[in-house]
Length: 470
Image 1 (tube, rainbow, N blue to C red):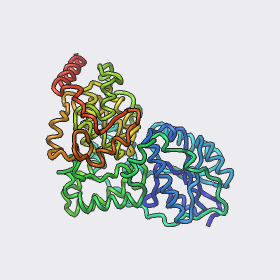
Image 2 (cartoon, one colour):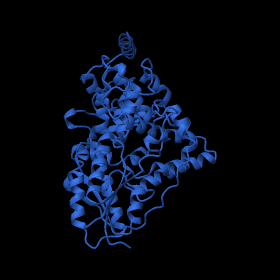
Image 3 (spheres, one colour):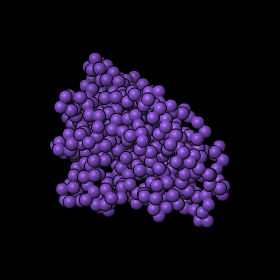
Image 4 (cartoon, one colour):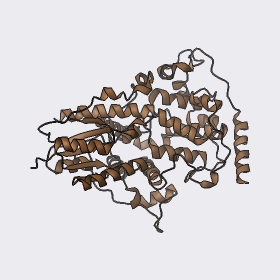
């Protein structure tokens, strides 16, 4: 048994089960010192994502304490922080889980190279995805650009078993100093919204595992037929936990696959949705500027409007289109938004309101607790038109007909719109408690008139598309 400590650098992998980096750190035999570093990337997170990350850190720190360990918190540039901890503790190795966005890759490459030059073992491990992005390619050795062939390429791949749960992390004789999480004020930008959204979060590994179990028991059989109905409760909600690594995609895959083999009707479609996340990261790895540039260059110069007053009405959930407004309000109350609703609000902003997709992307980045850079970028580009595997521009979601189809009993709209109702729901009223006071909104005010006629908005969008095509 070694006496040389090992640093376990945690980022978005707050779990004990199926955690390759943690298992490798424990296997080294020495004391394990878990550390989280508040760096420039953490500082740049949107309000909701940073707040929710803080909750993940807090929950995992408590879980570590239950195992006789601790989470060391430090703020600063990662290489400098790790070198300081190595100096303080005598650690001989650093292990971490890979991330795949360009800033993280560049940072981690620099850290690994520098630590190895220092004579320190530095190892990165898989765990955030089912498939490393560079391992899936076409017969021509190129990355996939369309989902369906990507799915066919990976659905038959053998996925290795989950790594056993780490039950114990050996503690060092002396712990290094740690900063206090409350001093980081990770929820400061949420302001009063934190109290509202806090009633809807599911934080930590135990909560994630419970969520998966309930979904598999109660919903997977009718997942395919009901997943597009926002009020059905048919989705798993696991995007929140996947974002912070409170559950691994491999755990979800194997559980879903077992149910598919047992004949569960919706299981294969559920697995396809998990692979949709993989496809987003596949694209984001190969096209790292997807969050800022049109994926299809022929869309450069399209006459989208920059931010505008109509977009502000959209942000506030005050467009006068009940399905759109209900979806935006769901985000302020719960921190998430149903996937069908995300498509509808994105289409409305980029097509009916002719507003640049990046305006919406940045707002989601600030407001979603399950914000994922790859899924967010691909989703917005897919709906707007310039993205890979995109919905054609002439496909303009009509929020009124979408509401008739996917919210026929108006339950979703009642859940989140209070104006004009004698007995509004708690969630509908919570919207007014969550949004900035500066918006000066009241449930007693009248519901707004539509800011754009749906037919006119659609025709305007199609005319702009035709002009752009030439």
